[in-house]
View 1 (cartoon, rainbow, N blue to C red):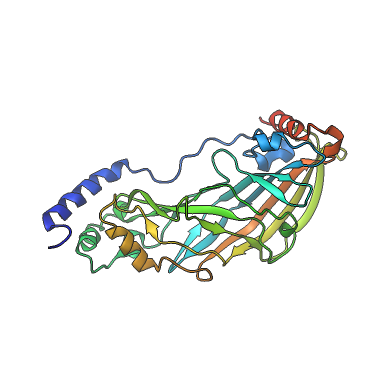
View 2 (view 1 turned 135 degrees about the vertical axis):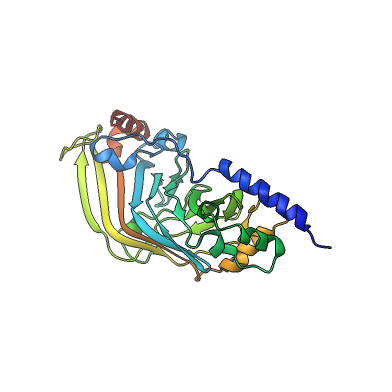
Length: 314
């Protein structure tokens, strides 16, 4: 006896099509504050996080890190998607032993534009030998029903930040746990590649060397060659990662016996082992900022950094 009868399949398809009007596309995010002057790239720096505020300027030093790319691509299994804007922001506390503690913003370390998956649902899981999936494939003459968006979402705090690696090539800069949210009326709103417990862990490194510059500025972001803030600018590098593994899709199709999960995984080659996937971020703009002489304001370096940040909010 088939798992799903023809009548049940048709009824479910009708319900899914109707539900499509209510399925959100993309990820809503809170507005990022606009910052003055040299603080511009750091609108999401978590300066008010307890770990950042507790940094004293002697044993521990607080910093903000931002890395932006306007375009790139990500290959997961057999599928390559062209990506749009990607913005990574984190707080970093430098420890006396040379290690660092990473602090994520409340809304997550990465905010990324949603990207359109080539071929849509037809390309992702059709044709199929599974009757239920075949029924869906027959419905995909409507471009709106066929379109799939993929959005990179943070699912935890980044780790292993290496400030020196940001200047070098071929050395991982930071570990970033993410999942990919696939959205389409037939997939439901809980279709992900990667999960909170088993994320995709990206480890980007510079493939090409960035340009290097240092500038000083006042706490409110205004330029000053003798200001109490400093900013390191690492610009123009291509960042890549080919080391990450990709788990199979899960949660797709409103829990319909996992049939859509299986169809997506079969067509796209997931799960996919490390070495078979890749990330490319073009023309990255990476910045690191902190107090020029944090020891001068010890033990309140974290509090002073936060005060400076707030003074620069427009």
